[in-house]
Image (tube, rainbow over all chains, first blue to last red; front, side, top):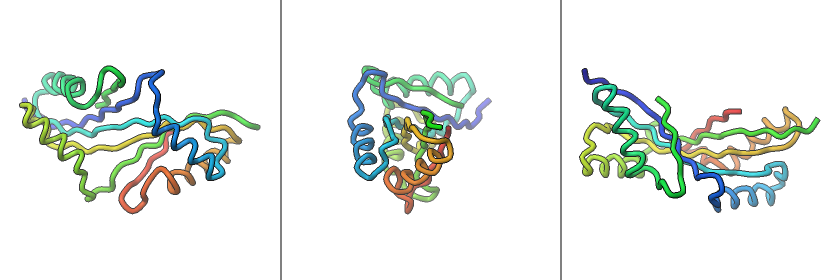
Length: 81
Length: 81
């Protein structure tokens, strides 16, 4: 049976990978007077609308995450359905 | 009392605002043979580590979200603590 499903994929930099965008934001906040922001890490997410059978959808989402949406060398992803 | 707190801010484009990055990803997926991905919307998130008193922290996070982290004309944000 074909259904439509929405899933959100959260992509983070792996621990230990430098996050220059986050560092820049943290410095900018500090210069604006917000000294209490100790660290900032950035990430991105994708809201996907997928059609297909339930088991197919899960497999396809995992596939596109590793093939297109993330760089597995420096990033990790988490899928929420 | 001063505490350390972690909060995540999710930033989305408002409904109706065109998301060229999402459209490009959706087209790329389609060309790769993944025709079942009907739509892709992109967003970003920030993981903030903040120190201060509990009420102060909430106010400051809301402030920096509207001042630096988002463009209120085209984006909305959601804070998860």
